[in-house]
Amino acid sequence: MRIGIGTPAELQWLIADTGSDLTWTQCLPCFNCFEQKAPIFDPKSSSTYRSLNCSSTLCQALTNDRECGVSSCQYHYEYQDGSATSGKLSTESFTFETPKSTLSSLKPSISAIPSSSPSTSPIKSTASATFSNDQGTGAIIKDLGFGCSSSTTGTFGKNGEAGLVGLGGGPLSLISQLGNSISNKFSYCLASRHDKNATSVLNFGENANISGLNVSSTPIMNFENFPTFYFLNLSDISVGEKRLGIPTGTFDLTPSGDGGFFIDSGTTMTLLPIDAVRLLLDEFNDIIDFPSIVNPPSPFEICYIVPDSSNITGLPDITFHFSGDADWKMGPSNIFYPLHENVICPVIVNSPAAGPSIFGNWQQQNTVVEYDLGEKRLSFAPADCRSYREL
Image (cartoon, rainbow, N blue to C red):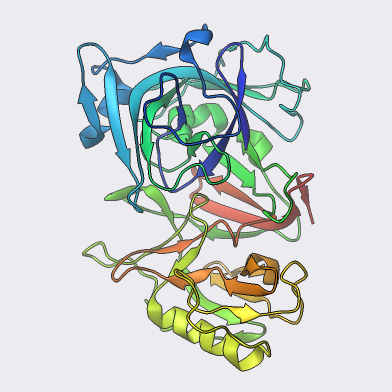
């Protein structure tokens, strides 16, 4: 998604990630950087950039991920796949697109306007949000704690992004920093990756509300030892109209901290326990007439040869059944990845042994998803994310 950083604002592409807390972008000077669409952010060009010292509450929220220099808070933040980013913890003004605005013609005179609504986050951040109906303005967040990264390793940069927006439930996340100033609500609509010109949108506060006959809701579960993640209660999966009958408790978080099922907008694939994946693929093989390829490339479990991977037909829908009678139904384009022009692969793979199950972003495309953290409720509905219109 497109985000304006600094004053005057510089347009950047960041990935919305509900599975992590730190918001960061690559910054100059950059010693180990990946390629990105936009020029790397230069903090010297912004009048609202400030670096933080080690005594700041935001730096303290990094716990074991911080290193204290003479005056600034240095961080080294790692992800589950081994990727990592390092740099200087800072504050800056961020501008987000909203349903009533666009940053496609971002004005260089964007300023940070403080909100009168105080934040009640556990780290007592000074960040706040202001919403505007003016084209080119959007939602302005002042004094957002973020990482100004000078070194990054791992899998970043494959889609031209400059960094991440941390939307997890931990104290350092964007949502925790804003707290009551956005009514503890946010939503997003992830555009299809098949549409190269589409842009995803992130919404806050009252702009995040979704309603209508097609909206389903399920409880969000929080666990003290895993504050970042939004756990959901997945009971079963259907292929077409047939339930797989996955054993009760398969997706539960154990007392030792193994397992569990959470939604993550920053992970592409959906990861499930091996027994659940086997049931799913066995059902695919029973009803899909296309031949499978020998030795599919990792991490895919199986791939099929089709006439045209850009026009997927003759394949089943699947439905994830969550508590609260919340059924998340998805079509073939949200299930299969077009590996080649005539090869498709299910974007649902085995999770590591004893690892968590993850509901990835491929399955979330063209769905508007609302997180109401005050009510501990996740709501979702099919949508056309190109124009952010609920279906």
